Image (cartoon, rainbow, N blue to C red; front, side, top):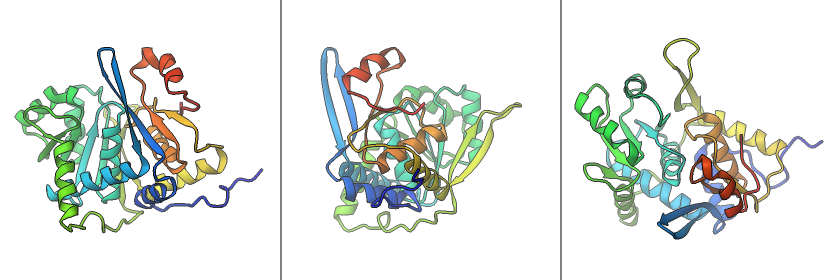
Length: 275
């Protein structure tokens, strides 16, 4: 059995190389399908590989404008396109990403942010109450609170992305030209502890890139496959496989919830999922 990827596949050293490589190789192919539902009205927004790279670069440029270059940014929320953009923008810009479980009790959430020394957080709008409490308590190092949607009282990913787009159009290349050291700390995550507090794990971009290449070596993933993202992105297996399917040119969709998985499998004609 051939244990190495087919000719034409590349071993990337970091997420910037991988994302740019996929955008070049797969271009207008759909990377993510986003479902918008208002009552019985349903619309689908297809984000191509080029769109994804553009969104990552614009959001990342906006993060640099906020003074977050070289900082630590936590990401918390359900699996969704904005989570993927935030995570990838961190890695492509050399920002340390701190993925957090959306179901953490408030005290553990606060302690994880303190322990990780996170400078900013990108969060799902359903966690707005916890964000307000974090602000009021003032125990963390958080300077910026960025919501994945537009809500009152917080900056939104969209407005930061729009600012980044303006900066790029005016010639700002600070984020675009960032060089990545694939062996430096890139992801700081927390795993369930067998005793008391969760354990902090330090990973480099090289750690993830090697896993992606190894998966490509043994898994026969096709470009026309459709992946449904069921494993939580805050788990390293979930986020690594998010990057893995991007390296393979696959389309990713999201479940409407656990009770709708069977329906979604048929709706999107899903051919694969990681479990």
